[in-house]
Length: 171
Image 1 (cartoon, one colour):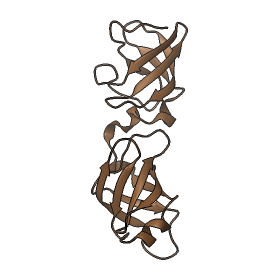
Image 2 (cartoon, helix red, strand yellow):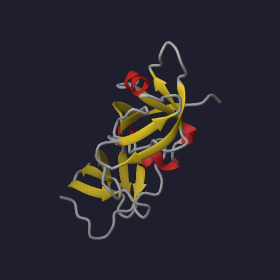
Image 3 (tube, helix red, strand yellow):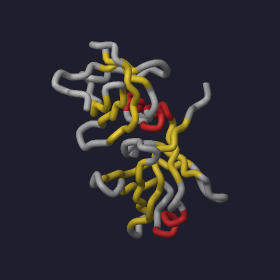
């Protein structure tokens, strides 16, 4: 089976003289760049290598990640990739990525395991500790924390079974 790839970040700006760049997540994904990950810079340059390894990665959690890529060794090379995106192999991304991929979650049905009630995910909010799904249903809205005790699995199709914690109320 051929490799599948996912767009994980956009190069926002060059930073420093040694070729570092600032990357930001795309499409509602959490920060996925990490040291050792192999990424393709797309669209590729006419000359040079498309594939790079992330040599170093740091983040302040607010303005993106400061990333050093193999083969990008000076300010001029870093400036040449500003505005481009980074692709990574799906097989190298976290297994629980489906829990955080807003593009694939919004509009999906969610079923409360306790009551059998069905609602839809209308928004995915990214928080410092965990994501929160905004559920819209016949009884209004509910903010559901995406933690192991609440969401165990996200199937490819069909409703997502959740356990609404005691004390959470529909608005």
